[in-house]
Image (cartoon, rainbow, N blue to C red; front, side, top):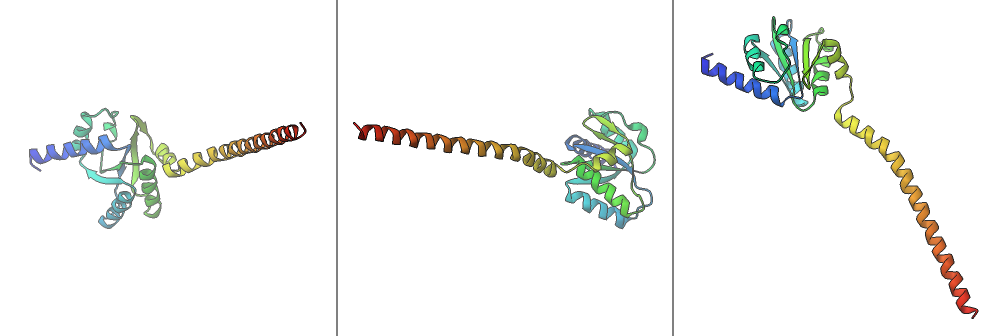
Length: 178
């Protein structure tokens, strides 16, 4: 790469780092090109990306960001998983892929919300429910009490209507007897 190409690559890498909810560094040793292509395709479905980078270029790209220093994990072959829209989905895709491909790639470290995640923490993140599942759980949890509240209000409205009818009938009968 020329100096200009390297600078453009570093700028692109910085943009990816900044727009990602999380990044995970992996060691992809033992994966062939076809497997890497499959992993990239699966990550793309979940709005993630997988990029093999030179450690030196990644170190330079991270230097100008507010990310914590993870340069000690930048050794050997490094692939970066960018969880652009969902940190959970990106981790889940890699964990599921590794189960089917001889435990490859292997997580080195992750960064989420300026916190450093070890491989065990990344595995726990991958087991979290997706955003949609969490939203449906919250909606279900709120739906029950709200439904009961609406039912109680409906009952009170019917009671008020019954009282109003009784009052009307009482006034009509009092008006007829005079």
